[in-house]
Image (cartoon, rainbow, N blue to C red; front, side, top):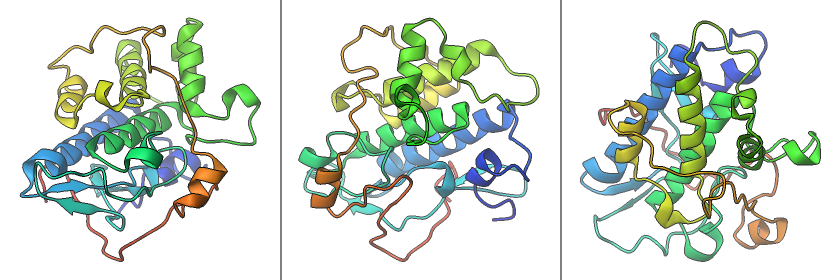
Length: 247
């Protein structure tokens, strides 16, 4: 893709930091793509490795979901729980170890992606102080202390709506709810991002919100997932680019 991957603009100083308008547009692009994969295609497609480095940018800075190396295809209505747990540490839902993957584990990874891009940092940063190492937990604690907006990327340039940034941060926490049944579907996420539907009423005291449970070294070794930040396992060699319209 002409502009490479999104992480190159978030974490490489030689590239300009994306504006908020660009970030929210990319969120909508990727959410629409995932909604199509989960409900609009002939089969359910689980991406299983959603993160900034797998979001490609075209010449107009539109977001395209790429690298389907871990993707799995299932008939609609089929039992997805038997699918093996793979992914990248920090984006992996806690139930992956015991229940396997599902559309809701993709939703969890998308929530981590929302926080990653809004805050301008990766989901796991082991070199940071203990209270800041895990992005989901840190954002939750800041919200609980009344300082949610302080988690936004300090390099964020251009004009932006504090209300919209706050909405996206809360949506990221909702998508990373520890209880998969409490996470929205990607169709709902699209509506939230387009402001067609208000976020449900929830708070820091809502069970499951901010209850971040990182995949342990023992568990990740048992399923063959390296316990290294930003590490992942590829099971296929196919690479596909998908926009929000299934193309």
